Image (tube, rainbow, N blue to C red; front, side, top):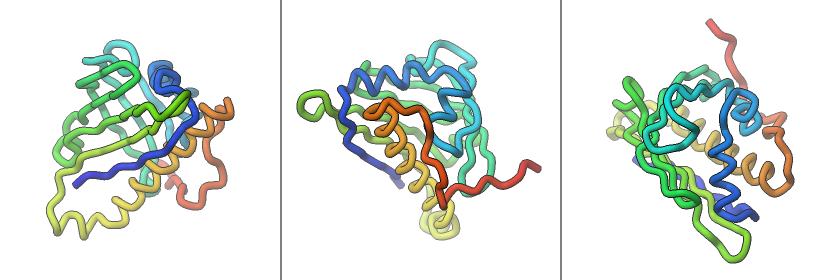
Length: 166
């Protein structure tokens, strides 16, 4: 199963790619989406081949912790990554693609590849919808940040309700 979201951003692919390259800490990560909590690069620089990062974010009202390894980076074109265990059982890989579109514009596409059978898809339907919504909001927020120079995430989001930590 593949989840994908695309949005046109009035910024050159280089500018969008460089925004990711500068995603170095908690403040940067939180500025992208209200469900984002923290990012910590444990190996290498942000979004370089072989770099490793731990991400914390709320999805479907619950805090999740992921570790990702960057597996392929083509500057200003593509970033591919894979999840570490245990998430790698379900999420085989993800990608950010920066496709040039005319002068000073690009299509930003976020994609995640999931290993789910028909029964798993049915049981996880609300969770999958929350992921789709999160991806859409990330794209909209990135567009706003890069086009308007803002650094604030989408606020007052009716789909974002973090549950208390337990």
